[in-house]
Amino acid sequence: MSGERTDAPALLAEARERVDALLAAWAERVQTIVPGRTGEGLAYAMNTPGKRVRAALVIAAYRAVGGVSPAIAAVAAAVETVHTYSLVHDDLPCMDDDDLRRGRPTIHRTFDVPTATRVGFLLVPVAGLVLAQAARDLVLPAAVLGRMGQELFQAGGIEGMVGGQWLDLEAERKTLDLDGLIAVHRGKTGALIRAACLLGGIAAEAPPSAIEGLAGYGQEVGLAFQVADDVLDATATSAQLGKTAGRDAALEKSTYVSVLGVERARAEAAALSAHAIRHLERAGVPVESLGALAQYIVTRES
Ligand code: GRG
Image (cartoon, rainbow, N blue to C red; front, side, top):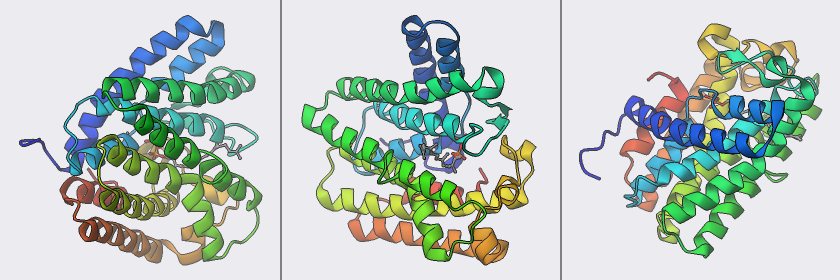
């Protein structure tokens, strides 16, 4: 659409505004279905304020390949719901055992471990419902919904996020080489980010060449995101991050920083972001918004 801003701050602000409103409405709805503390925990999780990078990627990818409906925000909300589930479970004592997330106490600190465990699991079917509603809002054929569901839940599963997190947990107090680290990062973080980009393209019913370009872009920025996250974990404060800084070192995790050092890790993230943009160029997908988000992902300056 003409007149839309394509800089990262505007894209992220728009994603936050639209997606947060949708998630707040879903949070109210789920509380009428899920009783008591678990329903409250679900609403708390769905209303925590994320940066909404994945949502901005869905929307930017959709528009880059010609999508025009504002209802794409509902697809973005589904992706963010899967992401929120992963954060709730990632923070549990049996995983990264963290107290702070998105500038607030984690769900198991605010409620308790069984509630946070249930909340995480319940968010997965909620994401399916949000995605199905998104397809209705966008008036998409069932086959397109099927394809979006396939990409989202494959990326969220053993071949993606769960598999990567599993490798990550097994690697604590072990030293990974760069290939091992790439496998962890591509799975636990990269797969969902790649899916966000793909879902934007699929929802716009883009041609295969454009979808391939978005997939390549998403794969590179997905890895760049986790490399930049490794750098931030080592260099930023908890107040800046809204989560506990220095957690990787405390858990003796191999990261891009432990393997390459801060400066080479930063350079690697920038190189991945440049590769990402070349995938778009080769596929003839306009670079403006997605390029701005690739740049934001490695600098986190908006
Ligand atoms: C059962 C083994 C097993 C796994 C369950 C918990 C889990 C699945 C996966 C964890 C995936 C995870 C949390 C990866 C880290 C991704 C990451 C860098 C998160 C931070 O993303 P931001 O900065 O956060 O976008 P906000 O809060 O802004 O949304």
